[in-house]
Structure formats: C-alpha cells, structure tokens
View 1 (cartoon, helix red, strand yellow):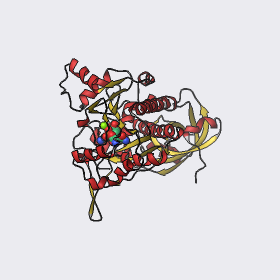
View 2 (cartoon, rainbow, N blue to C red):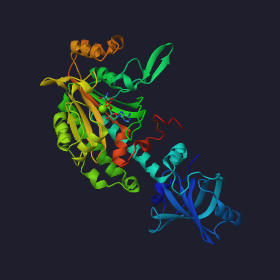
View 3 (cartoon, rainbow, N blue to C red):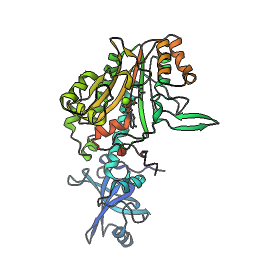
View 4 (spheres, rainbow, N blue to C red):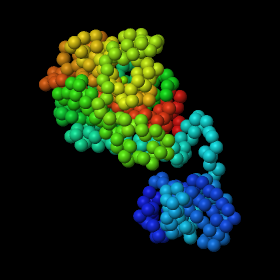
Length: 431
Ligand code: 4AD
Ligand code: MG
C-alpha cells in the first residue's frame, strides 16, 4: 500500500515532490500560512501550507485541525537550515484521513499517573519515543554482541515448574490442575543448553511478584541471559564488561539524536570503557562502613547502599563474592572461603545500581542436592536440572541483564516505568 516517503529519509528527496503520511503533532498559523508539524514515527517535519497553494476548503480545515489528526501531506522537499531536521515541505496537497477528538495529552504539564493511564497515547510524544528507540537499539546491540561471538540463541520457557530466584516473588498459575509459575529467569534452562551448544543465551520476558514499590522494579521485565560451559567467575566478568562496553558505545554511535532529545550527559557514557573496577563484597561493605552508612555486614546491599557504591566510580563496578546466604541456591561457593559465593553484580554508575547479576554455578551433584534441601525447594522439580550434573558436569557461568535497568541508566531516567512500552508494577496492569 505504501510507496510514500518516510521523514527519516527526507534528505534523499531534496527538491522532489513527496507524500508524507502521519499525524499532526503541532500547528501554528498566521493568516496566510499554516505551519503543520507532522510526525510519522520516523521523524517530524514542518509542512508549510500557504493560502495560495491549496484550495480554500483545505486551507480552512487545516486552520482548525486538532492535534493527532491523521493526514497525508504532499509537497516539495525544501532544504532550510532553520527548520528542525534541516528540511521542510512546501505543501500543495493535504488529505485529511481522520479528524481526531480532543487529544488528552497537551503540551501542558501532566502528572505521572495521568500519563501512565494514557501510556498507549503517551508513546507518541517525543521523549517516550526517544526512550523506546534507545531500548530497541540496546536489544539489537545486545543480541549482536552474542551472535557475533558465536553464542546460540536458545529460548527458555515461560511456564516453569519451579523457582529459580527464590519463592517469595513467584507468580503462580493453574496449569491444568497442577501448579505452574511464570518464569523468573531462563538461567536453569540455559545451563542445560550450554552443555549442548557451549555458549548460549536467551532473551525474553521474566516475571517477579515484587511486592514493594520502587524506582527499579517491575513485575514483568525482559532479561538477556548468556551461559557458558567451561567458564569461571573471572571469565564471566570479562564477558560482562565487554558486553556493557559494547552496548554503550553502540548507543553513543547510533542514537545521538535520541540521547540529545533526552538531554543525556553523554560525557558520562563515554567513560564506560574497560577495564571496570572489580571489588569484593567485603571491600564494598568496608566502603559503606567508612562512609557511616547504616549497613549490616552479611546483608545484601539495599538500593541506597548500591547507589553509594556505584557513585564512587565513573564506570560500572563489578562487586563479587557476596555472602552465599543472601544469594540463590545454584551459586558455587568460593573454594577460598565457603561462606562466600562465586557471584558478581554489576552496578551501573551515577547511582543506578545493579544492572547485571550472575556468577559461577554449583557443578557438583551432591553439593547441589544439599543446597536444594537447604533452600527448602521441591527436589522433584529439579530432577531434570540435576541431570546437568549427572552427565558430563563442567564448570560453567553466566549472567542476566535486565533490559529496563540498562535503558534507565543509558537514557538517564529516574524511574524504570518509562523504559518499557507497557509497564507492569504492583499497582499497574493498565493499559
Ligand atoms: O540478579 P537477578 O535476580 O539474577 C538472575 O535472575 C539470574 N538467574 C541471572 C543469570 O545469572 N542468568 O536478576 C538479573 C537482573 C538484575 O541485575 C536486574 O537488571 C534485572 O535482572 N532485574 C529486574 N529488572 C526489573 N525489575 C525487576 N523486578 C528485576 N529483578 C531483576
Ligand atoms: Mg540480583
């Protein structure tokens, strides 16, 4: 149906007559000319409609045309350095496709609840548009990274029989008379797949019944999870830092326009280069104590603790070897100190906190059984997972990065809710 021109490609059509199909973003008029700002999803262009250039009826209609009405404008592409984007359209034909009702989102300030209630429309506005474009680019870069390194994409299931990340955040559902849970992580399946393919990753939605309201938690979020056979904690950290550097540098290259629209201080992102500092949990705990923060040694870091630690560095910091007690059942203990786990959290700078969690997995059959018992998990549900340790068990490691946490940091957003098209939180399942 469409052989018209997209605004993003307009520079290739200088001095040609083209048709742009889109929506009215904004409008101002003097008596003799209307300036219509038309957006088509790929960009915004100013369409100049002179009284003499179109018939009288069209000219009158344009004067009253409400915001977000859909229309097709045909005209000559004219280079003008003053115009946003460097080009404008000198219009000789306007086809109005649909006259919009009063659009609820106006240029005035709206509260967040109102905007979130209208999320389906809010996506059309400039800042939200930029964020979701960056999100797309981050996902593309993340997949490119693993694809280029020879990882195989293996999709993990969404319905699962057991918990991966603790039983307190499970979403339970009825599965033909028995219990199933929405997946919290594809990791356990990636461990099995790594034994078949060597290097694998999954990318999909994950679910956690997060019962508290925070700036960092969604109940439905997307995670990319690589897993590597014959890999230890150090090898895992090497991949994690290369991965983050790659993503950030790609976004800096490919999304200049969006980062500008988001008023992101890109000098901070330019510093995201390897090597990243690596500190142990003990070192991080000492930093908190020295700073006089109210932190109890042995506990997991809370959001203020992570903020403080990440604020001390100008690039992501990798914190390794947390107390095994605060971490998941599958973590391998540090042979040098069995109270610690061979795990790593990557904390993003500028106070963003954890964006990656991962580590080396327990590969010993008997020790894993002990851990499953200790964590009070149902052994039957893990029988298949134990097979990974029964048949050619090897050291292996991996990690998960929450896409939304990465988007929040790279875009410089205060709250995670704007990083996903339709956010799900404890208080929101609409729209
Ligand atoms: O640290 P987590 O819980 O680790 C895992 O799920 C491992 N199984 C991953 C692996 O090793 N394959 O979660 C990993 C990441 C966090 O660092 C964070 O970026 C994100 O997932 N995340 C959330 N993002 C948004 N909302 C939530 N409620 C999140 N919970 C975790
Ligand atoms: Mg974590």
